[in-house]
Length: 179
Image 1 (spheres, helix red, strand yellow):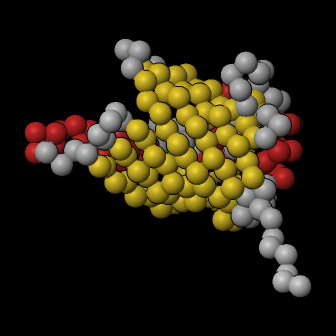
Image 2 (spheres, rainbow, N blue to C red; image 1 turned 180 degrees about the vertical axis):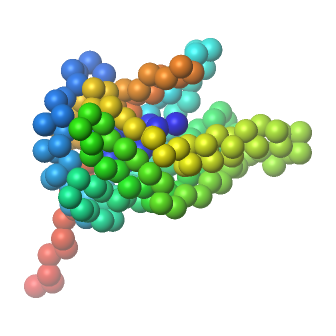
């Protein structure tokens, strides 16, 4: 699932808004600074019309020309009893027509599936996670990104699901010296 990629989510607005231009997205991307925080609220709708909520928070830990490295903590709510928590360090690079994202470090924790009868379901979740982090062509096209006043919205339509990620960016503020 690509929706929990912070840099992309940092640039996404509301679905009702038109996609932003690559120039606008690059300009916003270049404004990010180390320490900037993001929170993203995702709505995922699957082909069978079932829904899932995802909450991601993270912050920029490093910046280079055309690249951000950020740390994120993502919580997938899979019903009343099951949650998946993913902690990751992700590098996001700007390309001509899309962002590419690569996991540098990642860890998954699945809660609520300790019953041996659910081992197969848990294994599928972990395998899906491994597939995402090993994907070297994990890209989000600029056409799916809409900038908002306080962040961005990313809309992604895949064969099995549609994800709408609404993200809010809080710039890093240095603490003032005690007087």
